[in-house]
Amino acid sequence: MDPKQLQQTLERIDGRGYKAYHDIAGVHEFPRFTLSVDHVQADPFAAPSRVRAFVPWARAAIPASARDGKARERAARDFIARSFRAAAASIEEIGIDAGAQSVLERTACLFTEHGVELRFRVQLPANGRRIRGKRARDLLCRYLPDCVRAAAEYECLDGDRLEGHCATVEDQCALRDQLADNGLVAFVGEGAMLPRRSGIDDRPLKDGIAFAAPAERQVTLRVPNAGPVTGMGIPRGITLIVGGGFHGKSTLLTALELGVYDHIPGDGRERVVADPAAVKIRAEDGRPVAGADLSPFIKNLPYGKSTTAFSTELASGSTSQAAALQEALEAGANTLLVDEDTSATNFMIRDERMQALVAKDHEPITPFVDRIRQLRDELGVSTLLVMGGSGDYFDCADTVIEMNAYRPYDVTTRAHAIAAEHVTGRREEHAGPLARPATRRLDPGSVSAETRNGKRKMQARGRDTLVFGRGDIDLRAVEQIVDPSQVRTIGLLLAQLGDESHRVDDPPAWIADRLLAGWERISRHPDGDLALPRTAEVVAALSRLRGARLEQPGDPEH
Image (cartoon, rainbow, N blue to C red; front, top):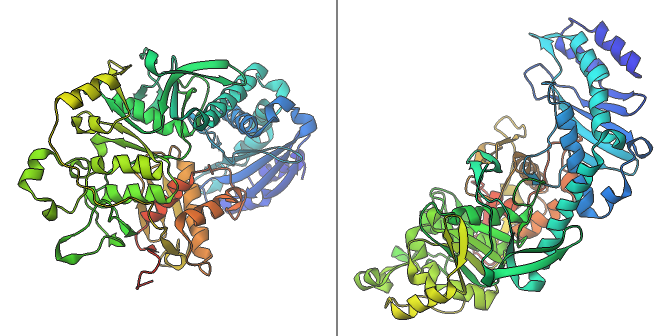
């Protein structure tokens, strides 16, 4: 129907029962765009209705420079979605998933063969359970066309801001692409603003201290828009970030762990990038572990319990951190990010005095300090480690950065001198070579999103929890998830995995890669509330799903 017919329909159903809203489902041809009402909510308290607007290229007139390459196209789509959100900011019934500080691959705005497609939600208005048809008429026929035009027609956009958005994202991608060739795992640009306003506000701290790279670590990279960019390069190998409490150690690490994503202009971290395969690991008391080979770090448990295919419903701190490390390696991590504040002490270090008191043959844990060199030398895995409490790591560090009042200083030479002068006397406790863990095999039949009544249920509760089938997946320790829409995507991916139960015996990372290849099509209906996670986060969620059967190849129970 055309706008006039849609208007007449909404006026006709004014005051009727809510289900009469189904009369507006379908396609509506407006003069400047096409409106598609794909799903009408069942009642006023259900999830909002799903709606799309299509603007043909001739009308949108988005310049070719905004579509020149994947990075620029993603940035342009992000900018358009944010512009739609800004245009609809005063209309509480209309919402779009436009994101926060990160520029993720999203489904809220797509560039198709024919034009720009916006996907958004409309909470169709009601009085109780009766339709407010006149308000809905104003929403869809009066306010919405202005929002679509403000966001998807270039003549209504701020062209300079659009170009700046695209250039910023393109430059971040270029910086990240240059890390490996320059022997780096991370880069922090001069003048970056790392502190955030609060734990729940990810915007840059007002009047924060700008980052200033130490002269010994300055590196200059060249990007297509800003030209030469100077900052602190963090080389491959073992890097310690040290310093007193509250001096910015964890702030730096947090910025680096989120450097796997791009950020919007003005975020302060636009020139902070990290190895795209970097994974943050931490202790996580009480998480499940399924079929993980923990033997490089934990073995010889009492009563002969094996750790080569270890499973538990309630992992301890050290066990959970060992599992997180092995799962990260299994997912392809080349860089590990570790903060002592969120680590299990007995996993990180066993000092000389404890070694003297508790004999090694009575201690199942091989501490991380005694494997960190092997990770570097035998597996090519770098480690960035925040450490404020144990100088034993000086012996193995390649680079030591001290954070003092949020300013970095290269203290590598001094740290090595201290290690030589103050010999700890502790003995290395590792035994044998180190290899990447064997890939576990998943039985997809053990993954189901069905509830007890046979219906599927996946719901993201913020970034921290995925309601999946009959239980919840706790994602609080998966700290590189930055958006609830990534959680929602993970839920749909796992549900699809359960639907493909005939495809068995694949490693989790292979499964994640296969599902992610078609991630934007995983929803049964057009869905604008999805954002792309990484393989590591999909594997992390799967590994935390209670009841999922992940087993080592050759396990007699498999």
